Image (tube, rainbow, N blue to C red; front, side, top):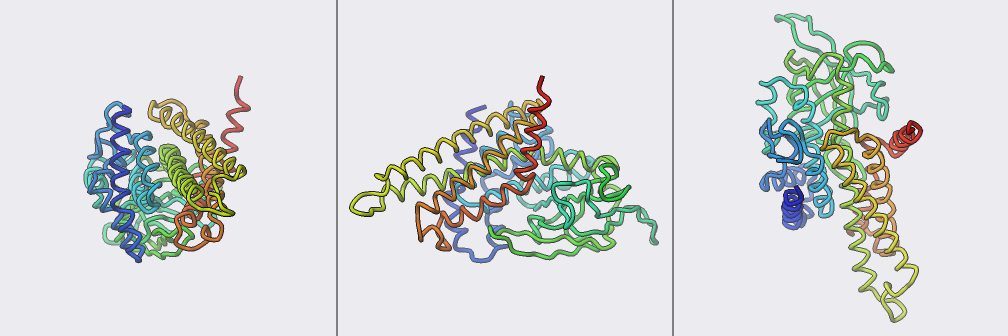
Length: 387
């Protein structure tokens, strides 16, 4: 198993070394995203976001043929994030956006969609968050109703607005959590749907965030889809959504480790080469203490990720381990990148410097796929329930 993971890390490292410099010079966000995805697909790394059963990579002993290996995702994301955030986000979105199709789609839909995802030809997006529904998915208000209109009727009609959806407007399809019964606040009555990017009644509105990548709103206005695009059972959408987050959350921590490792390396090189008052900055005891703290916290985060990913792949209850890894790794990345900016002084806040980019890229990791506060609640519940 370690040989497989070592090979994946080396392939991701190769993609990062070759693709990152080219991505820096693109200058147009959507072109940059497509270029990143093409580089990942050329090395067949996107195949690791789809189960082998559906045309993805054969994970061997890492996990079953109907699953996506968390350890593989973590190995890839850690290396890709080290080199460029766009490589990281374009890889993981292929899995996040398509996992509900793998878990809940019928044979025909899976065959039509997932092979293209694995080859990087179909771009996926995961549409959960709404203006009034973030950490609490029970507050989802987007509604799906049976379409009883003319022309034979049948299928579903969706109305609502999703926000902070990565891969807007690039995605070929969206997996959308919508309410088929009850009212916002009810945990029951949520269902998951496959919505093609060219569906009638689907509108998109891109916006900018501090770490640039394709992201925006998905607006559904009487958006019509066939019955076959219901994923899983009606009313089973919350379980599908939470299952997707549970499968991919550990990899957020792995990406955080990759960003932090790059920041530590940038600091180490800068402190060793930059001289003040006739000696390298690295001779300053306070700054050496900084490096020791950064390195130790990063290593602890890496061990927590390894533990969580191994448990998740084994099929064991990994909830608390995943929460600990996500909490500690993302908070550590924020600390490490902040110290790196401080070490660079004025150069650290200059737009375009590596540590300035890293500082912006790690901030969102403490928010998406479960805030740090949510992870603390999960860990605390586990602690209180112990015998």
